[in-house]
Amino acid sequence: MKKRAICLLSLVPCRSEPNDRSEMVSQLLFGDLVEIKAQKDSWSKILIIDDNYQAWVDSKQLHPLESKEFEKLLKARVCFLEELLVPLINTTTNEIQTVLLGSKIRGIKAKSSSFSIDKVNYVLEGKCRATVKIIKRKQLIEDAFTYINTPYLWGGKSPMGIDCSGFVQMVYAMNGLRLPRDASQQVELGHALSFIEEAEDGDLAFFANAEGKIIHVGIMLSNNRIIHASGKVRIDRIDHQGIFREDLNDYSHKLRIIKKII
Image (cartoon, rainbow, N blue to C red; front, side, top):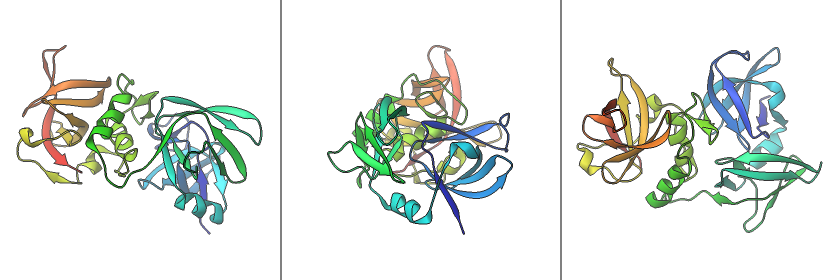
């Protein structure tokens, strides 16, 4: 019988190996659903439902779900938190926690602030937005700008710290499109543009190292600009060679390809 769980904490590290010193490769946010594939001591190897990413998490940081509850939450209406930090009140225990931008609120009714998970009742004191069927480039860019100046963090997916592919994945997810976790996977989607002049707001630019491996991704903006996570979420110039950092007076990333995803 499959074991399933949900993340009910604001932010949980996902690691490459089952120990606290292992590399953090991704994160879970509140509302993320997972399937438990294996267990070792106090650790669980998980499959993250939304992107099929596998990693290890501390089992104490997961809330186990019965199959019926898991299926209910999987099919429930999903809203994404669209504010940086929002109080969430557990009205069953009268406890308060903070949830972060991009967290999934499952089962919340339209024009309501209350929802329940596994017989526990919550009230959200902030704004969330239901996913859309048709992505609007303007909204996607507005969401990207919400992360501006977020510090770079390898494996990060939150406004507390984020990496380049996590940034792209979260912005697209908030607009109704699931992308894989890593840039090397994201580059397989969409269709390639022949010239940088063809790019529109929201298209994805991918960058390679000297060996040709995709190592970086960012979101195209108008007027030959790009918003991406490098040191922090920032806006830089881009041309056919790559990202030009005016503060360094040099190129920081070599352009490999621009893909149109939407």
